[in-house]
Image (cartoon, rainbow, N blue to C red; front, side):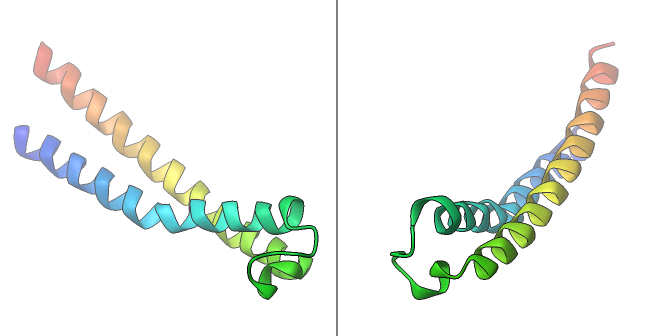
Length: 85
């Protein structure tokens, strides 16, 4: 059971590392849409179509990460409950 808990912890860390670029993309997209006002630090972010695309891709990655983390945490809590019996 301890091996499975360690496996879940490793999978959680891996998922969070994979999901980090998604949150960065969301942040860049929001900056381009609301913060830059045509004067972004990179010209790519001055085009709203690019920003909306970045938001969509980043949002999809973030949703995947949230679902995966929720599944892993649910499995982890079940194992903790079984272990405490």
